[in-house]
Image (tube, rainbow, N blue to C red; front, side):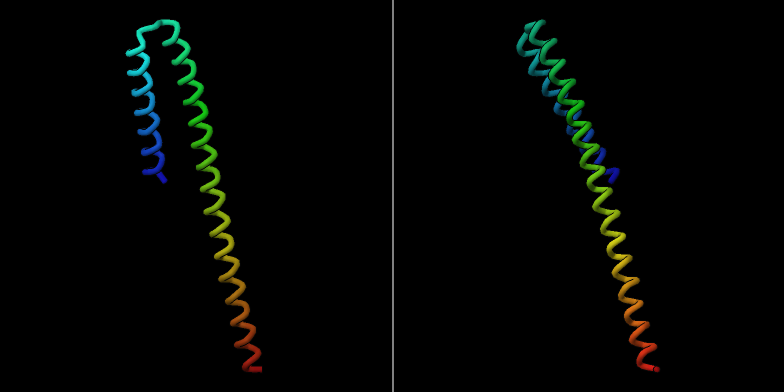
Length: 88
């Protein structure tokens, strides 16, 4: 999970660098300010999307763990019931 976070942060940083370089190529102060504001908005949206993805990943992992544990416990109970029934 930490490697995924680092990769996402690096991608965001690269996107910021590319946007700044593009703004420098434009050489318009007003457009640079507007583009910077748009970049900030995009960064906030990217952070929100990353948080949503992390939450979805955690929810999926927790649900999978709960399902596996429930299935294991249910199967063990079935085996025990069959085992005891076999002796009865």
